[in-house]
Image (cartoon, rainbow, N blue to C red; front, side, top):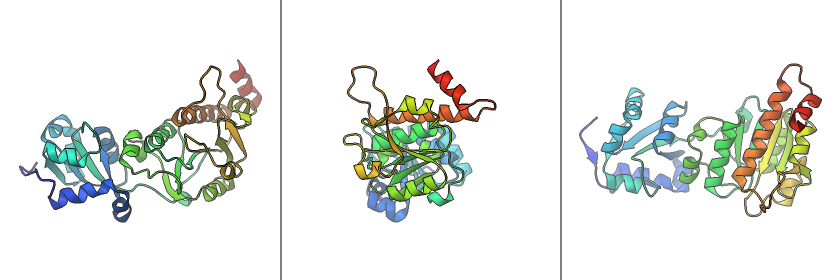
Length: 285
């Protein structure tokens, strides 16, 4: 590594990286910051581009494999002081490594076979959105759609909450909810709105075989849910049953229950010799 270390936040290169904390600059340059070793590791392994890597001297030693991977890919690595890293980072306790990455979103029409889709409609909290993205990845979803009424997936908090999953599956950005639903329904997907007051019980719907084939879930704002006009676009609103005294589940938890229930039903239905009746019996048993 070159001996030079960036120690001033007034350096043009550092100023250029810092401004990616603002959405307007991210949109203009179609680049964003991935902070922390987990996000950087996944970014380096992804087909999308990493443009530059910034690391403190300590991080260079602790995460030498990331630095080596960057060098092997021809990616510039810049050593920075703790003060500069504190200015670049968006966390209280920076982990010492940040990458500038190209946007990873793709048009929905370019996504291949879709059996399980997630539509984030009016989701404004970046931590919630990133956690749902991570959950969707874990449950084997094929695409996550951030509609035009939802948070920017390249928001620093959203990127961190996704724990690298932003780089694992197709992400669509800025699409109107109605257009996304129309496209998914055109692929043969059943479209379900997750709603705490929905008339359809999640487990009853699963027992009836509603999630055996292609499924799209629409998740809304944690505080006030989905607008009535959005729910009207779906096949039905589905609620996660509450068996205890809790008033409700938060968005990320409800999404995890819905997505894993769906993933289980789809896999059960796909097993040779397994009928919908067998799956329902297994669920009840």
